[in-house]
Image 1 (spheres, protein in one colour):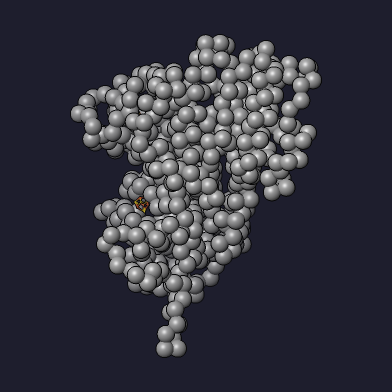
Image 2 (tube, protein in one colour):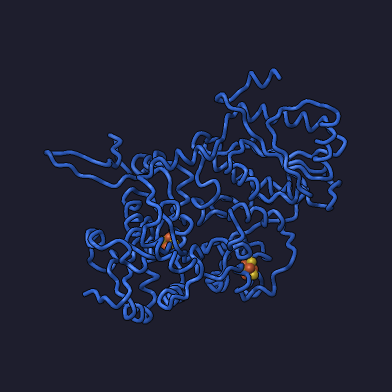
Length: 172
Length: 332
Ligand code: SF4
Ligand code: SF4
């Protein structure tokens, strides 16, 4: 794929973690697959029952573990299998974005899209589009950044022998 | 002076406001019982022992060391290592040591910005040469040194291993007494525990009965903007009370005084990132479904990071502002 070779950030491909609701977006991703639509291979899809199941903790965890972007896919408003799970997601993501922005994590790294079961082409389009946007931003690489932040520390001692002995004799 | 039959205890403070030390003094009569039972061998704020006195002790010879405050400077980092080496049990005392605390909010900036904000930008500061604190300075052949000011504020357990945590800003005297009792009688929970109940604060709140199961708020209010009804759950009144996502143990002191809980006890053991969990809870508690309506409600929370991570930014999964991107700063 041409755009992949052109847009590599620091020579490394960005990773996007995608949470797709089982009723709509995951089914659409399946459809994209069976219809042999091509999309960037940078996405790791995690199936959840509802976009409302995506706790903002999942999103920060994905970033903390090295994701460069997080994509959440749910049913169109009004179509949620659980009636209003996606509205909850909309509110949470809006609030989470405000926090991430302040933490220096760009808006484009977190994306929420409504994709119904029949919109396989939209899955491909959204993924390609997001990979491109994140590539332009470069890697987020929080694990690497954490190492950099910790480089200013003198050293880590680990537990002392006395402590290890005390812990062992406690049987804990 | 030291009595070999009594367990030896040390107190130390790092990046701290002094409130935690005050909490120890607040034991009032209780402090006598503590002094009776233990031998305090190091407490810079109150007793004249030196770092070299501690260094001279054998490793592991101190029974318990209580360290409050976050770790910001190289000196605090060294002291954390020293306390860890000399103590059998190291206790992170107070929100700053436990989660980073209020000083941890400085992780929204970096050292450069903080120095600029303190030593050159304020209108009350005259500093045409742009002099900043130096780690060492030589004059007349003499060298003076200062601890290094780190870029990032850390929790105690991001620097050394910690055995127990006593939460709170500051911890209540009762919590401290309970911990001392537990230590003296050997009734400590598993290592790594937070020495407070593992349930949400609402459970200890006298307003719990008035807390609705489902909240459909249309705006969030700050305490100075409303006349607070002392008989009704503060969250139900639109005040961002963090009781539902904060660990119990303070006995709901703040809500009892008509102040919403601001989360100083940190989360229960099931929560991995306090702020994100609160975003989840708050997202469920208001009533708006179009992007514009949502933005309107959210604009009533002027400082989301300061609200949701007030005591825990360094302990969050993100830890600090990612320095390479600063669009928020530029935009505001
Ligand atoms: S936890 Fe609170 S009282 Fe203790 S040092 Fe930090 S700010 Fe002060
Ligand atoms: S006032 Fe706060 S702590 Fe008390 S019940 Fe309501 S939400 Fe919980």
